Image 1 (cartoon, rainbow, N blue to C red):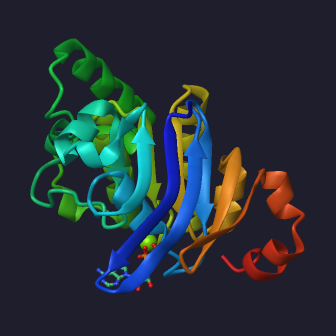
Image 2 (cartoon, helix red, strand yellow):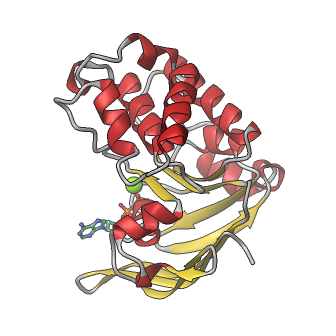
Image 3 (tube, rainbow, N blue to C red):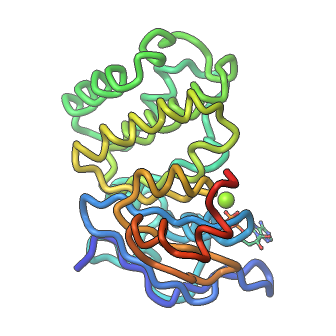
Length: 236
Ligand SMILES: Nc1ncnc2c1ncn2[C@@H]1O[C@H](COP(=O)(O)OP(=O)(O)O)[C@@H](O)[C@H]1O
Ligand SMILES: [Mg+2]
């Protein structure tokens, strides 16, 4: 059984069907990316998986039905969602924001060592421990959002458009972080409009368009697919 299994997922906003029966799976240790244009349904899908949006169909994480768990239970089980809006506490410091990520944890020693790990992974955050989140650049805030998500001790880290609006040099930093996390064996589900970034990091990809999965495959299969090349490459 896969770590995450999504079957025939339908999600509605009022009567509008945003996801029209999606199948997707993520194996433990994989980095999987969902690419697709604005409005395709990427955020809606992550929201359903992390319990923020009601759905029809089946979502199982680690063998358990997601709709039978509340948001806290999902985080405790390891489903950690780094949302597109980042949801930082703007007037909390970097350090306080990181601790908020660990608020459901009881393994104090683990929290301490994860704090060290996050500060090592993000030297910029280490330098800014006492700085309030709202005073930081977009890239630093994205790093803080990822750092805070790591403090929740994820089994599945879901990142929603982590490169959106960031300068290329910052995207490089985020790339290095993802590579490091991948080497550590973390499982990641990455939603991205930036298909170049997604193909670079994912071991498997899904193309989502207007609520349907149109293609699934390896980065190589995506890169050599004429439709992907015409519609998605070189435009990000
Ligand atoms: N809060 C909302 N109310 C109504 N429709 C929404 C809402 N959020 C998203 N949608 C619609 O659902 C579809 C999928 O959106 P979204 O999941 O945000 O796509 P993506 O993340 O791929 O850009 C779009 O048609 C969008 O307009
Ligand atoms: Mg989105």
